[in-house]
Amino acid sequence: MTRVLYDLCGIDEGLRFSPFCWRVRYALAHKGLEVQTRPWRFSEKQALAFAEHDKVPVLVDGDAVVTDSYEILRYLDRTYPEAPLLGGGLAEARGCFFKHYAERSLAPAMMRTIIMDLLNAIHPDDRAYFRETREKRFGRTLEEFHSPAKGLAQLDAALEPLRGRLKEADFLDGEAPAGADYLVFGSFMWARCVSSADLVSNADPVHGWLERMLDQHGGLGRKALRITDIEGAYR
Image 1 (tube, one colour):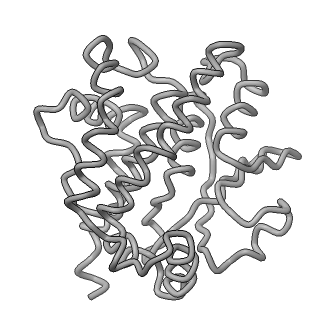
Image 2: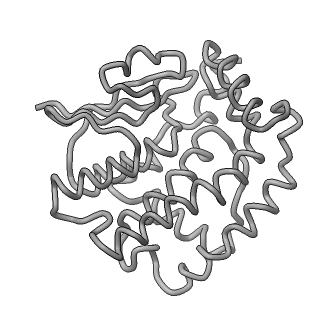
């Protein structure tokens, strides 16, 4: 059986930057499950018609087709209960909190900081779609929305809960990473893949956690292609 993950790519098929797909890639590695990733772009909506969905990640696992990163993590725990990601009951509720924290506090601050880098990392055929949908969402042009100083200040404040937790333990989930770590770390992988911006200082406890997360699962994150690896080829 071939397990397939539809995974967002940019100007290079190897540039995979979706925070939601990174959550799933780490979760699959956590479970020790092999997966074949299939590059997908914003303009390829029809390729996901079989899933009755128009966004990635989409996981095809045998006869199962699962969409939405958090639902995929829940599916993996139900189907492959060893090495839990979220657990059940209160543990899963904690994971749900981290999902919302990453999406509503961290991602907006990062977006304001790296939006123009992100635009340049997206495949040229997708840029008009990205600009139109994001400018409609933000109510202003990407150039007007872009404000690294404001974004970094917003991110610095949003990181306070992480700093508190990471002074107590090496990972959000304790001695080893699990679902909470992956739900949050996906956003940092998103920024890392498309931008060279320094979002966190070396002295910040969050920086140490990021380094540890990059090394997990055989250096899954550290080995990922970054825009800085290829930008000369696309100028």
